[in-house]
Structure formats: structure tokens, C-alpha cells
Image 1 (tube, one colour):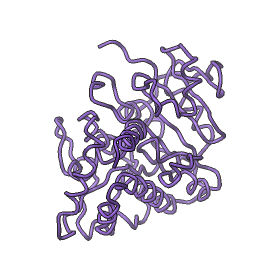
Image 2 (cartoon, one colour; image 1 turned 90 degrees about the vertical axis):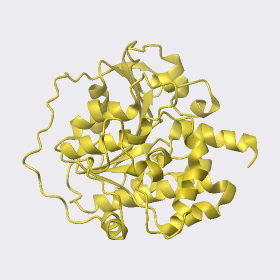
Image 3 (cartoon, rainbow, N blue to C red; image 1 turned 135 degrees about the horizontal axis):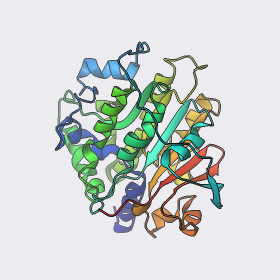
Image 4 (cartoon, rainbow, N blue to C red; image 1 turned 120 degrees about the vertical axis):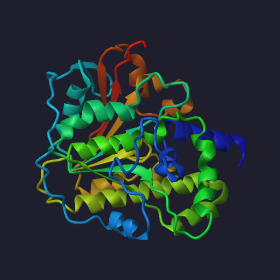
Length: 336
């Protein structure tokens, strides 16, 4: 692998993310707060559990103990603020309500993972869990998290070898990333939204190793394919006439694109879910404005130019780059 090619991959992973930060070795670890996969009700798989996770099952019965948080924030319609159908909102929930008004069956949420040095800025994962997910309580039934749960039944060291091969791509990311998806799963569970994760097969681990210098591309493609398949499995557990979003997919912003660029088309589940839902799929990227830099990777984002023209850092900004594609930019964080 030459240096320029490797640098390009790292730029992709900085923005789009890959759950290797929440996968393999991290899936069995606990955070500083003591949150574990057990707390999030996402079991670490053995052979039997893997089959259960992959096949879904009957819809869960409503839990009468679930009490949805009450929203105390008034919803405003937004104010036009520039290109790409830009709307500025007084709060995050108002912008999110604008997206939900499209009534998707599946909501594909993509984020950029926090990088080292940004620990004082609240991540997109935590903002989604704290500010936006409560709006889906009592409505959404399932959330598919791009977490790769580790296996211990492959009979060799391929899991550890894949983990080591992917480590350069996650070395620049904030340590807090490792368990924030677990916390998100726990919060969703408390709201009656069942979390599930991805369980790679032993053969899929081997295919990553066999890809050699293209191992990162292979993993990104597997993540996109397995997430899309998992969402379809969850969606088919419920009647299609239900109001949506019935299923949420949460992960890196590379995988949820409705219209991926030619070089990213193998990584995205967006087109297949558009087909599966007959157009009732929405792509929503969550943007922490402090993460955005003047780099090639960020400049490739469809909303980048409109974002640079907008100087209202205290409002939540919503861009619409296509009929089913949105980007929600959080307001600037308060100074610590």
C-alpha cells in the first residue's frame, strides 16, 4: 500500500467512520462508566446467539414500563438560510422534526466519529442519544448499530489479525468512541427501541485478511452489506403500514448514502433500502461543526459549500441535498 492511498483511506474513515472503533476487541470491553454490552442488552455472540441475531424473530411485545421522555422544546418551522434548501432552527428537535415529516420507514443516520483532541466537544452519537432519539420513543421499533460483535468460535487467530490490520484506521479516533454506541444501545432499549448489532461470520473475517492491502475496502463493503441486510430483516418483522421510522440504522456517514459516489457505491446500503422501502428511506447525516475542516474529505460533502457560506453558528442548520438526503449541523458547543 503506498502512502497516498493509505492517507486517502484515513481521510474517508475520519469522516465516514467504520465501526472497527466499536468492534472486535472493543465489543467485550467496558467503558469508564462501567457500561457494557450486557447493559445495552446486545449479547456477545457464540454460535447459537449469532444465529438468533442474524434471523431476527417475532416482534417484541409492547413494554408497558417504557415511559417516553416528554419534549419541553417548542417546535419552530425554521428560517431559510441559503443554498441546498437551508433552514435554520432554534433547536435540534425542530430540525429533526422537519426530517421526520417525510415519514420514512427506515432512517439511515450517519455520523463522523470524534477524533483525538476533540474530547471536550460532545459527539454526534451522544447528541443523537440525548436530543433526537427521544423523539422516536414510542414510534421506532428497532435500531441497528454498526457494531461488529466479536466471535470466539473461529478456531484460529483471524479475529485478532483483522483487529490488528484495522488498527491504523482507528488510531486517530477518540477513545470515547469505543463505548458510545453501547450507551446509545442502552438508551434505545430503555425507550422500547430494540438494539441489534452485526455478527460477522468466520468466513467474512477471513475474506478481510485475504484482501491484503484492500482489507479496509473489504471491511467497509461488508459493513454496508451486513447493515443493509440486518435492517431489512428487522423491517420485515413489522407491518409495512406502520408509521415510521420503524427501523433506524446508526453508523458512519459513508454507509447511508442514497446516491453514493462511484468510488463509494460498494459501501452504502442506501440504494438497496430505497428499493426495499419503495422510496421511504431517508439519509440523515449528523454534523458536529467543530469537526469540519478544510480538507479534501470534508470538501467532498454535498453540503460543504453551503455550510461554509453560513455563519450562524448558534442555530441548528438543516441542508437538503436531495429528495431523501439531509444533513443536520449542530450548533457550536458552549465553551467548556
